[in-house]
Length: 249
Image (cartoon, rainbow, N blue to C red; front, side, top):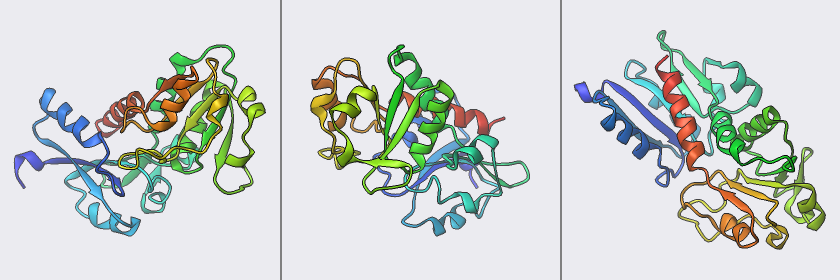
C-alpha cells in the first residue's frame, strides 16, 4: 500500500455522484494536511456488496452511509452506539481498533444544530416528509428539541399521514415542514413533494435535507410564499465533522 492510501474513508450509498461528502473530506484532508487520508465513493447497487468493501479492515477507518442503506446496513455491523440503536438508523461507521464495525448516527446531531437557530416560540410542530432512515434521525433531534412531529408517507402507514391528507388546517397546525425524502435530489431537480404549497406563510420553516441542488423546488415554492428556508448543507458539514471526531477518538 502506498502512504497515501493508509487511511481510507468513504461514502456508502446508491447512485451517489450528487454527494458533496467526497469533495468535502478531500478538501479537508488537503487543507488540514492529512496527506495519508483518502475519501472515496462506494456506490453499490445492493447492500450485500458491503461485505466486500469492509473485507480489508486494516485500511478502511470509517464510512459515512447515505440513502438507501441507513437502515439496511445495521445487520452487517458488530455493534451500535446507544443513540444509533434508539434511532434505528446509521449514517457513520467506525472501524474500531479491534477491527469491529460500530454504527453511529451523526445525522440527528447535524440536523439539530442546523435547525435550532431558526426556531422561534411559535414553531411547535413539524411535518417530516418521508419515513426512511433519514427521517428517523430528524425525529430523534425533534424529540430533543421538544418539537412534536408527524411523519408523511406516500402510502397509508400506521404512524404517518399521507400527502393527500394535508390541507390548510394541517399547515396552520404544523409550522415546520422538513423534507427527509430524496425527492428533488440532483439529477431529478424538477421533482418536489406533492404539497399544497399555497398554504406556506412567513410563520413557516421549510427545511430540506437535500443540498444539491442548493435550492430545491420544495424550497423555492415555500420561499415564494414567504417561508424561511434552509437546505441540508450545514447539516452535512455538522454531521461530517462529528463523524470525523468519532473516527479519530
